[in-house]
Every structure is written in structure tokens, then in C-alpha cells.
Image (tube, rainbow, N blue to C red; front, top):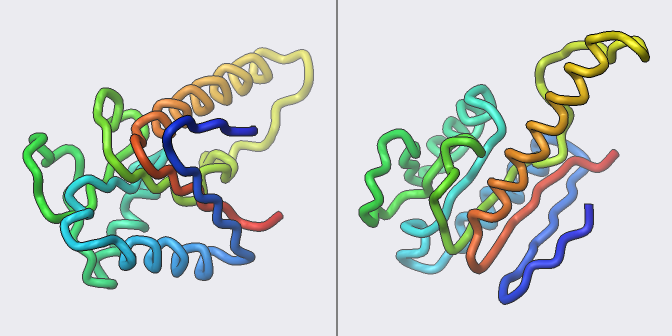
Length: 149
């Protein structure tokens, strides 16, 4: 997927391991200027991945405010939630860790020509649509993290 982001910056980070990827995310968040956490969000495709990144940021002493507790008033904490939960919100900086990872459902691919193939295709389209929603939450900076193939 090629991105054009007018009046903003797309930062792509590709690391060989999850640990290196997560350290790059932490470095980017630590580099934020004073007060910038109030308008920054880490968005994830699932609640499971939110748990991982919430623990990571908490251990790194980076304050987190879950979107389900966010009322729109400025708070000096990185907002965190699912792609879907972020719909309708906007942030100066959005971080999408492992944005291109395979869906975490662990389901093997369906045989061609089966109803499961149609379901898989629909699920992939839904995930792509949710990723688009997440990407368009960023006003100034979109940080895209991924693992090297």
C-alpha cells in the first residue's frame, strides 16, 4: 500500500523483531516534546494487542489513557484504543504498531471456492477498512511500525 499524506508526515519503521519494533515505538513516544502526549494515540487492531502495548508503555513509565475512558478533554497521556474505537476522533500524532501484521485469529486459509473463502475475503476487507479509519485519525504525523519479512 502506497500512502500520500498531504500536509503531514508518514514515518515508516521496519524492525527485524517484535522487541526491536517495540523499542522503536517507545523511542518515538519518549521523543515527544513536553505536552505532546495529550494529542498522541497508539491504535491497535484488537483488544489483545492493546493489552500488549498498554503493558509496554506502562513499564516504560509512559502514561496511557484508554479511549474508553477518554472524554475529549486534554490529558497528558498517550491515548490507546482499537482502530474501531478511534473512529470519529483525531490526534496530531497516531502510532500504528505492527499495522501490517496478519490477523491474530490463527485461522488457516480457506480452500478456494468455499463459503469460508468468501468469509475470509469479507474479514480482510473489514480489517483493511478499519486500518484506513486508524490511519486517517492522524493530523500531522502517522507512525507505521512493521516487522521485516
